[in-house]
Length: 428
Image (cartoon, rainbow, N blue to C red; front, side, top):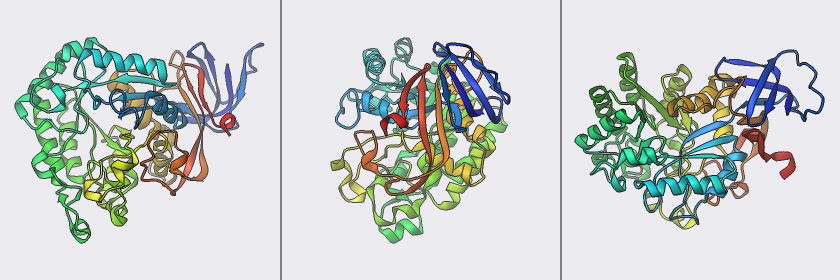
């Protein structure tokens, strides 16, 4: 199969230029920038119409409801949403019921995903038993069962001794630990960022400093243990200061941020719309802008959707009582493209954060348009405008903060292993 007349976006080389791409089986056989030779006889030729062709997105931290909450999201529905959003690999959270702290559950998730999802899905396992932060899970057995990383999802391990043990043991397994930095004593019961705006709304808030306090402890433990630590959601200026200091000291620490915290700020909470009830809570505009700049500079390594589906009943309640989280698989790319259209970063740099950096974190082959790489690809029009209708989302749950928002950037086609898993033209 030959993909011609494409605008090739290669994060590994930083190139953004016209060209063509050859696929044989499930791999990229060759890439031609510039002049495009005639395709060989018998090849299937697809004209990309000059649109952007990039490595498929690798989304770290996707919550799926199987097992335990299939009514909110299944691997089939999450996979369809991912494919429509240009996501070719979902890295799945262990926040299932029962929790993925048992090798059998990890194996079930991998098997069920392979059966039902049109895109790749890789399981993460719980860092502590029940994700309660009290006792380290059987990390070795979980790694053998196929876990690509260890995390307690949105829960913070408050006990420093337990966290140290987890980091030490994960280091011996060569696996990254993904942790959520929020000081629990300061954050419990809060649904907004403490400050003047939260006060005017009458919402209980947690100080932005709660993120930095937890991060400082985690960075110290990473230094002590030599473990690979990935901070899942940097959202404040203060945390950036601590992260930069750790990087300058040579610590093996990476960081991500949520697409919602790059696109929204605390002002969006004004109408008490519970789709904006997130964890961490939305921050001040100064924090959002600082995080976006840190992403452009490379201090923050990657973007994740933090896809967390909830049914209507969990969100149609007073703001303080609403379930925390939003869906994001289908909206991550158009939301991220606001950085491109604002001139903050080019498409190769953006896809470095969306695809190549997550692949590096987990030791995957994806994220590059090079010979021999997996043929996991997304074809998209970065300039196509549309108004998002949440009821058109392929996720079972529709809790998106971008409902009725004008967005720019449409996925046209997605391939996984050289096979088409989404074609906008065919779906109409």
